[in-house]
Length: 228
Image 1 (cartoon, helix red, strand yellow):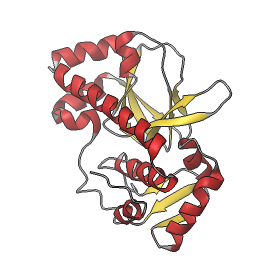
Image 2 (tube, helix red, strand yellow):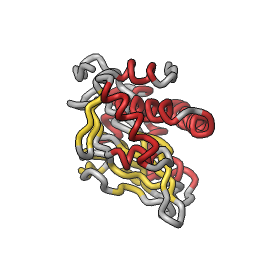
Image 3 (cartoon, helix red, strand yellow):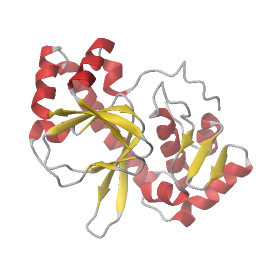
Image 4 (cartoon, helix red, strand yellow):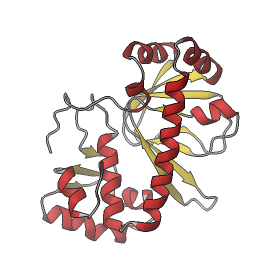
């Protein structure tokens, strides 16, 4: 897969609003870098802040008290993080952690809401939130009905897409086989044979703590999964 990023479109909330509006939102926040694996929001914590993802991919996970985790979504540059708790005042419903180094812009929820009103972005925000709700419904269906190969292919394609237009290596995913399996609520032994088959077919390269996707379309097709 070519990693030329010039043709890749904008994504997330950023893709729904004028470029100047996104820049103003980012500029009003506090730009904060993060490391790979760093937690940006913790499940159960109070809300009050909204994060704008500027650089780097993030994972949204739900955790059980016994430590088990399930990936709910992947976010990337152009996405909003924590806008649900920012609007309803409830505790965070999930944990957000960095997959790779990057940065966010942090805004108090009230300031974010004021800026959205002043910039006339309310309808765009509603559309973005509804898109997340629809995405969660599709995710629940996949967990219940798709094969391991199809679920893994969809996750990998989602991770590549989430990199955004400016990522230098969108097809390189800084997640181990253990992390990919855990993201799907599976054990490593469930995904290892799938990855081995893809490696033998020349679809991926596997290194310690890292996966490089060579042909996303062929990988998805080989799993029997159809994506829009």
